[in-house]
Image (cartoon, rainbow, N blue to C red; front, top):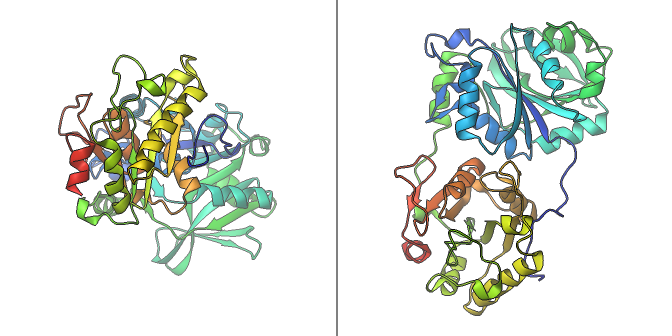
Length: 428
């Protein structure tokens, strides 16, 4: 079936750079007046706790496993993760007393055997490229690689200097600077090499590791001029409210630069709420569905189907059965003058499978195959809360169809509601 782009268990995935530590144990003293009862990483920003943005930024970089380093008000953070990120593959450590940034990292590294581990701050959002940082880290052979942010006219941060080969040569103190590279609080650490240093239980990563060993250890840097904000002071906390606000959405914006993601069962074909569609002869289109794809193809540059197919993982049907269903769907759509550019599916049995909605793995797979896909210019249509969460986790607009599932409205994951796919097609 060369017309289709399938994404299943055999799709190759990078073996390095899939684990991240999020440092979320700070006291947040500078925000205490604004947040008397909350840890800093849970500060409400544009309708969501700030940690929500940090987690999803990392997941959209292909990072799949998380370790949370917790301390102050850790119960609130664990409650948030249990509520909003039930499908996240995570573990955590809790400091009984503050260990400093270095002690916190060393403590959290005990929770993983991953060779390379990202480290980020829970109160800082830097939209860095994890792939680029990993490439720099591996090419340089560094023990630690820093993501650096170019800045102008600042005095809140020190400056990081590096040579033409990308090796860090010095760290300069905080003072007024016209321009320079700052430490954005994002690191990629070679776990085993770092732990060989045998640091004390409490130490500062910045002072006792980076600055102390800059001359003798291989520390690398990569400058990336992308969005950065640190909500550690009230002024930037207030600024984040505006900058991270999701702008209003209108269907009139859609043109050929947009991508349409579609769930399958209950959107394109009739769902079997208490069972699965096992064979092609059980696949029945929703009324008029094949012909809708011509209008959809006229408006959207890409059309992608993303579907959870746990029945394959359970052994209740085969991949050949699934391909037969999709062959029938594709042939009918093509015959009606429409198109589907890719079909991606997850056969995972556990909700923590990165490929299974609401996790964003299938969105990333589609973008790997079609690099022109912009999630900021994408819509996801589904009939399940996991479809809506998948959309929000990937930064995609969410359209809900109440064809088989009932979701109480309004819902923070949902942008628009239509009765069915036909109603959506008529609206555009």
